[in-house]
Image 1: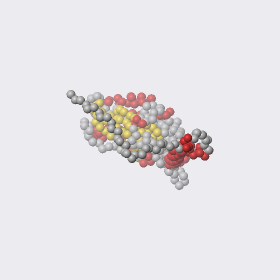
Image 2 (image 1 turned 120 degrees about the horizontal axis):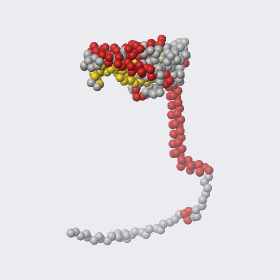
Image 3 (image 1 turned 90 degrees about the horizontal axis):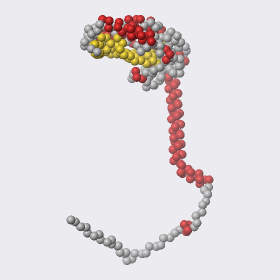
Image 4 (image 1 turned 180 degrees about the vertical axis):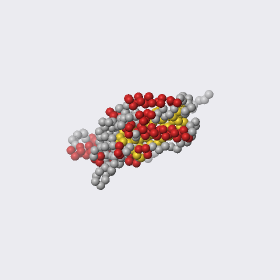
Length: 323
């Protein structure tokens, strides 16, 4: 058990013997006078208002100047971009150098030359020769689907004949319903301006393959990713931005060739198993019928700098515009 000592009383220090008494507080004479109000002069009001709001006014002025500067620079940038996007290469007489000039398609190969096959190697259970044969079949399907004049004119017979017999019926239905544009191109016969075959079709893409098994059937799966660019005879082409007379299709198609030991003879051959696509510069009216024409929107041209441009190598089918 503990106890606390009582607190000692506070000790008041003694005043030094010679400390002087403090002087009484004196009040200034002006504080004794009655308060009188005086109206501020116009100059004083202006000065007071400036002092109170100087920061705000200066900040607002700075913001206004900054906004004006940004607006001017942005407008200049837009105009510059428009000038650049509207600049079509011409010859000494002012005639356009070609329908693809000034666009990414200018560097693409023409027609079949743009379809190159990967090296055929064995992909068990498929031999190197079986892989080579399957790749050749797919190349022929690409040619007959996107480049063949009879297909462009609306006749899909050559393309359908390349497919496995058991898979042709479904593809016939696709063409009848206008659901073919993701793997085959038909030109709208009423297209105006008309399609210009003399310019050639520009092509760029890749092809890859692998061995997969679906429902017990071993398949060689081949995926193709291509750009197909078609030119239309646009009058006075040099007066319009690059790309205005072009229709571009970008597709991703999955093809399969089953191993002959796993299927009936009628199911052996080439099958279409998956597709995605996008179209630039064609009308929805034509697209919904499985065809293309040229959208008469001269102000559009090639979407310069668009992160979702159809020519962007990082484009994906999920970015496709749907009519």
